Image 1: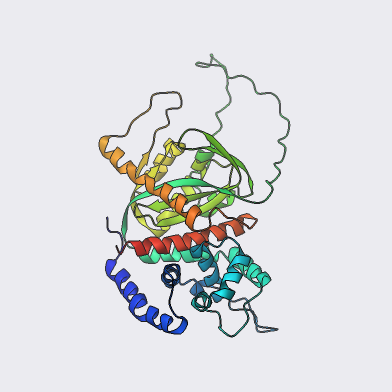
Image 2 (image 1 turned 60 degrees about the horizontal axis):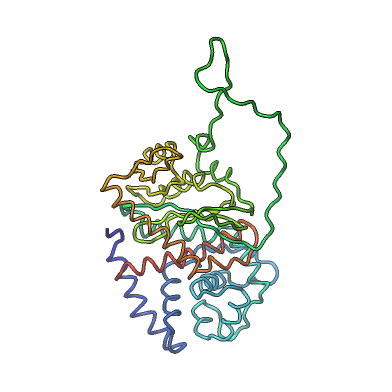
Length: 370
């Protein structure tokens, strides 16, 4: 399914390829394929337009935050794992320095300046706002066939948050089976976490999600449990491989609790027909929520010691599109820095991952040309 305006993409491609690239080669010389990819990525995301200046006019002017933001996108595209490695590459690579916008005759900012700028970007949600604007611009007026929803483990280098001890309570009384006797009063069944999410706004749902670093475990495709210390990234991906929305939660949080807020974020950016989810999201609450948004839910049934309900032939064929979510998770980790998290705290980890998500989104949009 062609879900982009090909004429607009071709116009941008031709402008970069036949106007910008020749001028850049004349100034800095030959460019490697990775640097060519970086030029296209920076032109697609245009992150400098979303940078908020914090200098008030007193004291020494701060370094241009637009150039520093471009450098962090370059860090994701080139697969550089540390900020120190990025600065060393900028010092050695004249072309990369010019592409990011740094002056050729002035000294590069120090590592501390890069770190302070990254903290500002994380606090302001720069990468998240840029990604949302990019998705709305390119896919906002298009009809998306399938949205694949999945969560992936993010390992972090920080200590898990200490859990508060639950207050001691009286031992639970075993529930009686069958119908209550005449005159017997039984306690009402407490609603589940998914049922408590019903009717709440996106801001309320995001506020309630656990975000601290902790320990989590998850069954892989082979049925084995894998444990890790860190976070869990939840992503909605289109059937053409473009990540639409993402949010970061604690590693111990169940995938299904991120489904509602993620679906609402995606609905604000694009229009899609089908929601594809694995058996971890099997719930009547999530099916009803998907239908309330005008979507058709295709969720793999979890028998829970009962009889498994199989997809019909047409549904099974559509469900195969969900493999795109696994490709997105793997590409983010292997090619765009998702496996090398060197920062601490939910906001900084999310910002690091979203810089990689920006580069991944730009790359997928460029691949639609072929």
